[in-house]
Amino acid sequence: MKRKAVPVMVALGLILLVLAGSFGVRFLERYIPSSEQADLTEVFGVTGDEVAVFLNENLQETKGLFVEDQTYLPISWINENLNERFLLG
Image 1 (cartoon, rainbow, N blue to C red):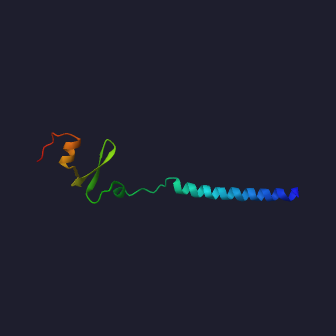
Image 2 (spheres, one colour; image 1 turned 90 degrees about the vertical axis):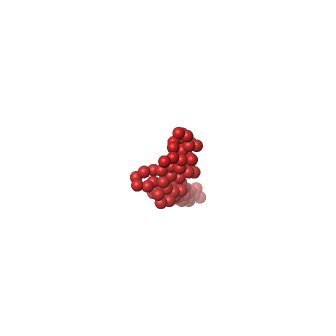
Image 3 (cartoon, rainbow, N blue to C red; image 1 turned 120 degrees about the horizontal axis):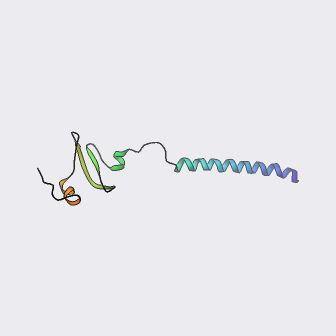
């Protein structure tokens, strides 16, 4: 009886090893980052000519505009967060 039990145990061990490997591959495929790039307009919540505004590495709720190779920010946001010396016009 012992001689018949050894091949059965080896076969069961190999089956368990294959199952563990397949579950491991599925786990890695799900949780390891892919090389696919995210859509940055969706990530930053901008559309069209809007640009995301960062201050000290923090994404701000305020959005700027990019028109004719110039970036424009709201004067109220500039006065609140940067410097009140900016003038209109």
